[in-house]
Image (cartoon, rainbow, N blue to C red):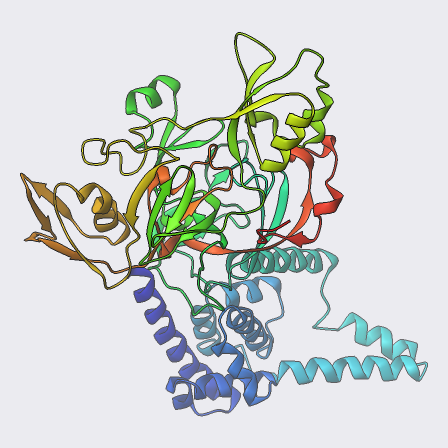
Length: 523
């Protein structure tokens, strides 16, 4: 709300500044107060065609258009210095007002046309062989920029453009963990489209460009939480569908402990453990929580259940990726050639050796890797995951006997759907009501109060998704932290533009993966 008020006040100030500035350019001041007409007149003053103002209606493009128009406006009044252009870009209303009330500053003409005419004079002088006139024009050229200014503007524009492309259109990501092996491997570098599921406006306004949430070396957050913008998303090219790999903000990443190699949600580690290890406690805005990539197994309105490792949606078994992985106990023969494991491209951290024998280990693998090991003489047997109280919703009393292999059934909330609230199911929906949808949920005895009023049911305001990794026994996903709200969806992976083995260039490049699709299920 603070940002919205700021934008409204800024537009009013801009209109007022144009009201006072236009008469200096022989235009009627009242035109500066009329929405639309003010920008058309602005274009006329700087030498643009009236239709150029239409670019201000297009998201992202309008930012660059507005900045360019602001710079051209001050140049039309003879203000050519870098500080004048910077001031106009940072806050045009104040710069325009200072020009409007300055008795010394005059309107010199349509800057774009004047600059074009000046360059033409230089070309004509050079063509006519009049070196003296040419040198004089060069020396007095008001549009000439120093080398330092050229570099400053080029660097600023490059960072500015890269930051906006990264923020709104396409961003490069790398796969740091094996949770999506073997569909997406550790060391895969992806381009992710943020337009496919709808461009999301940033919640965080003040941030260091091109950094997500931490400043390297300093190990500090790279943004200020306030002021902030409310959540808003433009219409997308498509909707999130079942089996789509999706990049999203970690749902429980709003309150975390920052450890040296990863972050932990406060639900995952106790305050005592964090304090003992010296981990920093951080509260992050939604768009600054860590990025995750998983496969969407269920969409809003679905019912998901896992039976003996097989996922069922609405009672029907889902199609599994060809390279889906599970954990296996492997006993290697005495004469086993260890190079077989290396050739299988098994991620080293997915190999857990037994403390009793270097020939007994647990390995996460796909079916092809399993068959290769068996052919090499290894004994391979599947591992069943144990029942765990750490699984969502972390309520073993009402959700007993859950494991990553046998889970659910669980309903994926859909916008507009209503559920009855009970002590038996409140663990499923507490975070949705309290955090994702921003209500004050209080539980008193066996009664529920939402925003101070007793509630026996709840109607969802957002759509939710269920995300899981293809490496089913080595993936921290919705089975551990629950639903992913539509607000947290970031984008759709497009293709792999580089792949380094195990995430290090020294291990070599996987040439066969470069420019391959990042969302195929079949090999």
